[in-house]
Image: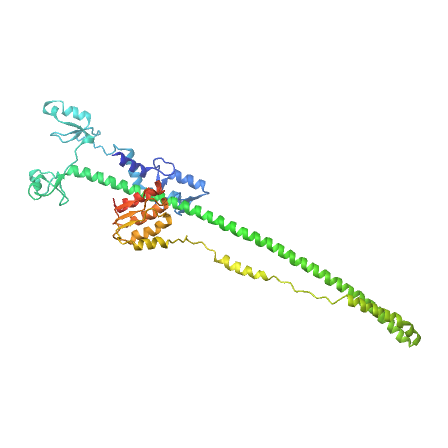
Amino acid sequence: MTSNLTALVENVITCPICLKHFDQPRMLPCSHTFCFQCIQQMVTDNHGVLECPKRDGMKIEGNDIGDLPLNETVRGLLQLFENPNSNIPLCDRCETNEAEHWCDSDCKHCFCTKCWDTIHEVGQYQHHKKLSVKDKPLEVPRCGEHNDEDQTLKYWCELCSKEMCGNCQQFKHKDHKFVLVTEYVKSLGEKTENGLQGVQSCVNYRSDRVDKMLTEIEEESQDNQLKVTTAIASIRQVIDEQERILLESVRKTEKDERKKVEDYKRSLQGEQQNLIGQILKFVVVCHDKNPKKLLDAKKPFEDYIKATDTKLLELKPLTRTKKHLPDLDALKNMETEIRKIKLEALKYDNEKLRQLIACIPDKSTFNLSNLKLTDLDMEIVAKELEINTSLTKLRLFMNQISDIGAQHLADALRTNTTLTDLELHGNQIGTDGLEHLVDALRTNKVS
């Protein structure tokens, strides 16, 4: 097993929680696999509920984790990796001991050390070629058409994509390009291994990218929640303060006006009582029918009426101006504006860039360098990459593109099959951005 394949297998059989080889690998409904002990610990730490640490929204009750199935594929791979000698054949002679040697001469059998020594001590057997059983040649099947001639299928016809024996190669496949089956199998193994490694790199990269996106979503949500809470709290504070001020003003106005009116009312009530007293005196005088008493009362009545008229003249009738709050209607407009506030995607457009792209005469080459283009501008460029079927060269050097802009380009490159030259030097693209682009090129097989 090569070092690359070993790393590939290690990645598959390692628990992402404890970072050790899986122990009782259990598969969650979301298909993620973890050690059973790690799952138990997660349930304990999360108050009896299991939530997938990959943050895919999967939840199950802690009482149900015992029903989670074993991941037989991972367990089989784990056993194969940890016990590489488990497929060593038994000795062909004693059929008891594990074979250690392969006779590559006439015997063509596997032997343990004891049986090898017993058979190969004397005679012509002493000169047989001994190999380690691990180096035993692959069993090559024989040709079905020339079986009687003991012809093995040791060649691979590249034109027909099939195995063939020496006889078939000389006649039926005479002018076809061919290689030894062993060479082809080795090449096929390397190609498959590289392909699997590429797939794993792609899956790992995208998985990491998804995790980062989940973190970004969570952080963005927390940030927006804080902004909403802070903004509304500020408005609420202003409203509450203004409510307090307005209510105090209304109540003070009421108190002042009420005192003024009540003072006026008390003055009127005093005059009213005086009037009643004078009326009573007048009635008594009139009731006696004594002219002298009426004449004697003439001056006091005149003095009262004159004095009271003077007081009433000074005590002018009350008037008041009605108070209102005309600016309260502005709150209705504010309410309407507040209700318009909603969460939405950032809107951006660069009409100048769109016009520049539209006016490029040669649609196979876009020179958009040194234009101070940003990550948001890359969304426009990415859309052009998706629809332009003749673009082969794209120059974007010396701009202001970061990892986010590289991601937009990478997403478009996954489907673009024409671009062969992409220049991005002089930007702020980091490791993450490069990984976006590498993953896109790997997926699209564009070099």
